[in-house]
Image 1 (cartoon, helix red, strand yellow):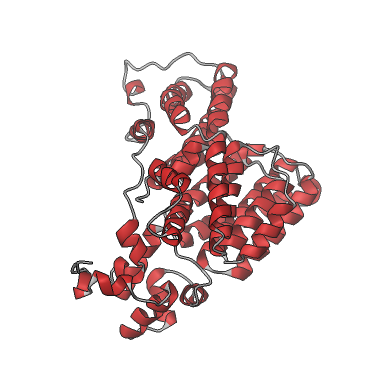
Image 2 (cartoon, rainbow, N blue to C red):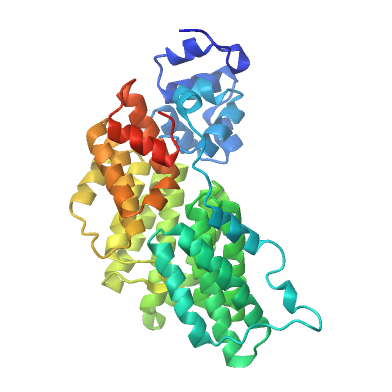
Length: 421
C-alpha cells in the first residue's frame, strides 16, 4: 500500500491501521489539546454527558456536520478521528431539481407582482385550494419529494397572491391554508437536506397561522421549525422552540379546554424534544419526553393525523425506538419494534422505522439483518432513503464491516443513495 500524506502530517496508512475505536481517538485528541470534557462540550454546544458517551463509544457520531464540528473543536482532521468517513464517503446524492425550484419559490418577496397599482391576484376560494393542499401533504407523507416540491412551487405563489387580494373570512381561511402549505414545504425541505430553507418555510408558516388567528396552527409551525433546527444540528435553538411550545401548549391540552388536536400537537412536540435530547446525549430529557408523549397518546386514544403529525400510540413507539437507537440501546429498540403494528402509518414513517432497525442491527454487527431492514426501507420510500443521512451512515458502516467484497445488494444500495463502495 502506498502511503499518502494526510492533514497535519498524519500518514493515511498509520490511521487506517490504528486499532483504537472512534471514542478512544476523540479522547486522545482532546487530551492532546489540553481540553477537559467540559471544555469540549462547551466548544460544541453539547452536554458534558454527550462527550462522555461519545468517548466511551456509547453514542455514535454519524452526521457529517457533527463530525466536522468535532474535528474543528479538537484541532484534528476528520480522517484522524474516523478514517472510514474520509476514505469511503461519497458526495451526497444529487439534489432533486424540484427542491431547487422550491428554494427559488421561497426566495425574495412571495408575491411581488401584486405590489403597486397594476397587481392582481388569482380569484381563488378556500374550497378550491383545500384539495390542492391536502394533495401536497399526501405526496409529502408518501415521501414523493419531487412531486410534492413541484406542486408546492406552483401552489405557494397562487396562495400568496390570493391572500393579498381577499379580505374578511375568505382571507382568514386562505391564510390558514397558506400556513399548512408552508408547513408541507418545511417538512419536505428538512427531510431532504435543505434545512436552511426549511427554517424559512416554517417561519412563514408561523406568520400565516398567526394572521389566521389559529393558535394551534402557530404551534404546528413551531414544530416544523424545531425539526429544521434539528436538521441544521442547531440543537440549542431547537430546544428553545420546543420548550416554549410545551409551556404555552400544556394549558390548552389539559382540563376541560383540552381537545384531541391540542393533545396531539403537544404530544408531537414532546417527541421532538425526545429527538433533541437523544441527539444531545441527554438520556433523562429524551426518556422523560417519550414518557410525556406516551401519556398524551393514551389520552388521545387512536392514531390521528391532526396537523399532519400522525400522532398517536404507534408514533410514540416509533420515536421510542429511534430514541433508544440514538442512545445506543439497540436491544431495547429491537424489543419495542417486535410489538409494533405500523400498518396504518405513512410510507415515510414505515421507512424511518426500517432505517432505525438497520441502525440497531448495525450496532450489534448483525450486517445481514441491517441490510434487510435498509432494503425494506427503500421499498417503502426510495426517495426518503436517498435523502437520509442516517441511511447513508448505516450503509457506510456495513461497507466497512463487509471489507473488500460487500454483498451485491449492499453495493447496489450504496450506489443508489450516493455512498462509495
